[in-house]
Amino acid sequence: MIGVSPHPTVPLAPAATSALLEVQQLRAEISTEQGTLVAIKDVSFSIGRGKTLAIVGETGSGKSMTALALLRLLPQPSRIAGGRIVLRSQKLGQVDLASLRDNSEVLYRIRGGVISLIFQEPLSALSPVHTIGSQIVEMVRLHSDASAPEAKVRSLEMLAKVGIPNPERSFEQYPHQLSGGMRQRAVIAMALVCRPELVIADEPTTALDMTTQAQVLNLLKTLQREIGCSLLLITHDMAVVAQMADEVAVMYYGQIVEQGPMRSVMTKPIHPYTRGLIQSLPAMNTGKRLFTIPGSAPSLLAAPAGCPFHPRCAYAQANRCDVGEVPPLRPFRSGQLGACVRLEEINP
Image (cartoon, rainbow, N blue to C red):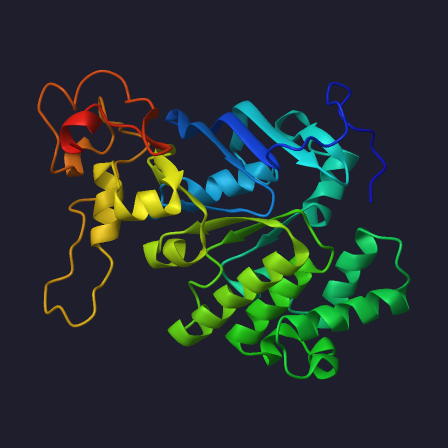
């Protein structure tokens, strides 16, 4: 670990009793030859201790980029251009991740030790030339004072907790020697072995079959309760949202268009985009054709005027939804917020 002092303007005050993570007006930009593109547009949300927030949206909506921004892992030439990412950690106190230097020691301690990340594809998250056990042991030793034998014991215990049948055997195996479901369990073991306060799961079951997906999601919920950590779940699957989330933030074109408690959002969505996502869920034995949202999201290089969803929206009105600024996210009902100029009209 590189011994670099924390950013001098970041206070490490005692942890507060409020939300574990609070994101305020987060903005991310991408520098291109065509100019600067705004990929995340003033996104705000919070995650309570022990709670699950699901960020949902189609591919390209900005949800994965938002997750990477929280850990300062945005790929070049992307960068955080504004906003705050306030972490209130019981281990480190209060810190604004957005203001830390890239080589800050505090940032190294947070990654894996306080906030861990579960990737969509376990083969890309695991080193192919190191055994499963050595990779988990390395995580333990990076974020604790455990000796090598102690780290091995903790690693084996976590492999057993995630449901790997023969932990001692899997400890010595390489990633390619495990099935997809077992690899994802190993990734979860690595993410949780240091008992982080927040786990970011980016499409953790997309590469798995339906049976394995259900098992992995149930495993995540069980371990979350045992460890007491919060969960930020990135997904495009509204069925997964209904199973896992306490709160939901729906993203489209880099901004949150609806936000609120899971039950309210799933049963009474107020934004047309959220309605489209829920209607796209396949229903068993109905005999009806699967609903799809027409068209696709616009390019960041050609942002439409007004609401970015209006070209695909069944409720759009000419000279109202296609003019002016992007509608702001505003309170509506039952703790729900929506970004639509017609909220009152389409939600009587």
